[in-house]
Amino acid sequence: MKIQAQISIMFSDNGLDIQIRDNDSFIEFIDLHLNPKQTCQALSRLGNTPVETCDVIGLEHVGKYLETQKLTFGMPENFPYDKELAYNQARMNCPEGWEVDNYFGSQDSFFTDKHGLHFARATIRRWVDKKEGE
Image (cartoon, rainbow, N blue to C red):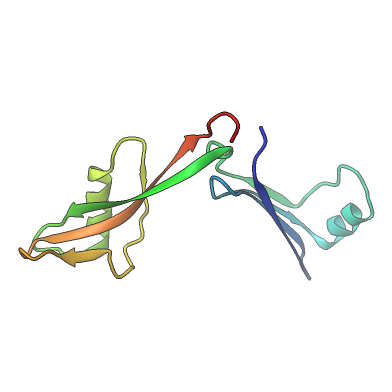
């Protein structure tokens, strides 16, 4: 599988940090740390240098495209601006196969329509397979 990858390499007194990200799925799927000794070994071309930590996450999304949409849903009259309730309401109204973002801090997260009904808005996301040739 070929992906559009991005790499970040950061040196510090604690060693070397490397992150690798799939640009299409917006997933940082490798987070690697080498201590100072391991960093020197790797830079001196010592093959198969052990690393201090290596976290691999989100592999189920690597090689896919990220799609996002806005989901608007009603809120109870007594709790128009409750973030925890909004997240639960969003999960109940989220279409199958999508995930709800738990962020309700933007200006348009909560609003009241002209009839006085309370609504909330959340970002939903899903990862879809790439088509041939993409």
